[in-house]
Image 1 (cartoon, rainbow, N blue to C red):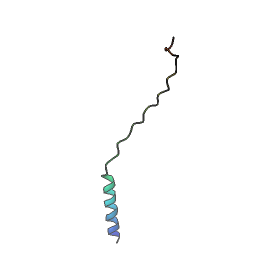
Image 2: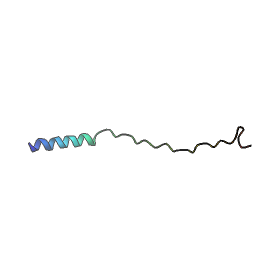
Image 3: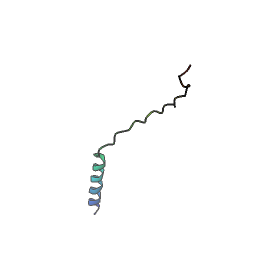
Image 4: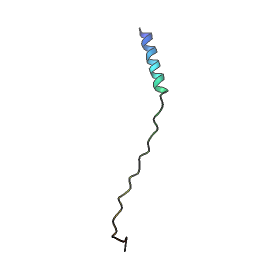
Length: 43
């Protein structure tokens, strides 16, 4: 019984080790909101 359990754990470990890795997603940098400078810009 314990041999079957050990074999099952080894197989599960191998499957987890060989699983396809998820690519890391880079966080999007947060930019400040533009400041309103009047109807025609900074005049």
